[in-house]
Amino acid sequence: MIAISNLYYAYPSGKAALSGINLRIEKGEFVAVVGHNGSGKSTLARIMAGIERPSRGSCTVNGIDTRDKTKFLELRRTAGIVFQNPENQIVFEKVHDDIAFALKNLGLAQDEIERRIDEVIKSMKIERFTDSFELSMGQKQRAAIAGVLAMRCECIIFDEPTAMLDPRGKKDIHNIIVELHKKGFTIVYVTNVIDEVLSADRILILDSGSIKHEFKRDELLENVETLKSFSLEMPLIMDIIVRLKGRNVDIDTSARTVDELVENLTNVMGGSK
Ligand SMILES: Nc1ncnc2c1ncn2[C@@H]1O[C@H](COP(=O)(O)OP(=O)(O)OP(=O)(O)O)[C@@H](O)[C@H]1O
Ligand SMILES: [Mg+2]
Image 1 (cartoon, rainbow, N blue to C red):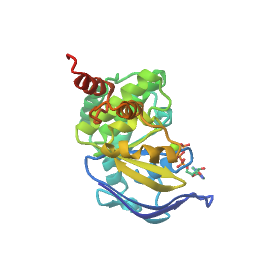
Image 2: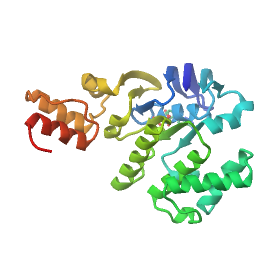
Image 3: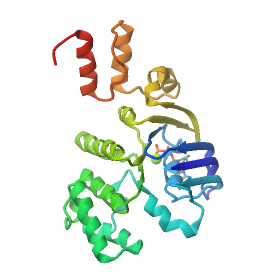
Image 4: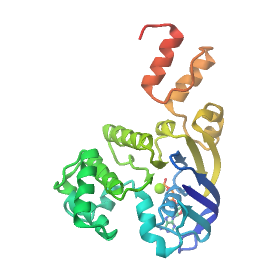
């Protein structure tokens, strides 16, 4: 789905933000990207969405070279991006008009535009003619996701979409992302909430503009020291599992959610469900 080869990117100021990036993301994969402030996560997300173009090397999305300006609309229809601050994505007063504007730019007919808006406002549980600016932060983020879904993008890149939300909003948007993955979307998920990486198939650690380490979700347990070496925390569920293992509790390590952890723990204890 996404192929990045020997990527180097410097901002116009001359500052190198990314270098030596080689990465393949398969269709339907869920990849989490973590790293400290300034490590290059947003720059990488913007490169994948075609907002920035590689200074050297290449980035293709479904075979579309993001440097090819003639493929701009095709790229828009393939990969969408959701930012940290949903307010940056709102242009018009009404949710409907915001989504409609992007679809008009694709050259779609009015009835098709309305059909798609109907579909996405229903799936994101938002109101068609609500004033976008009056929505809660969480609802604004739902509206931003609705906009991407209306474009029928196969790949959605999320750049810390829960960072500005309260705990309930964080959980809500995270659940939506997990559901989108289950429906077959390719997900790139930049997050600073380490617990959220448990939902991903693969985790990339970015540091000083390079991918310093990557591992599969199932290899998380073996990579506890790696996370520590980048001063990253360990997901709470993994921390509990590691501690239980340290006390010789023979627990299944596959849990991704608190419910699964409780289930696995119950099994070890031979308790009833
Ligand atoms: N518009 C810009 N112009 C110049 N340099 C920039 C610009 N945006 C980011 N940078 C620099 O590029 C590097 C990578 O920034 P980036 O925003 O990609 O990091 P990040 O990992 O997303 O950080 P954060 O966790 O704070 O969101 C940083 O050193 C940053 O200062
Ligand atoms: Mg960022």
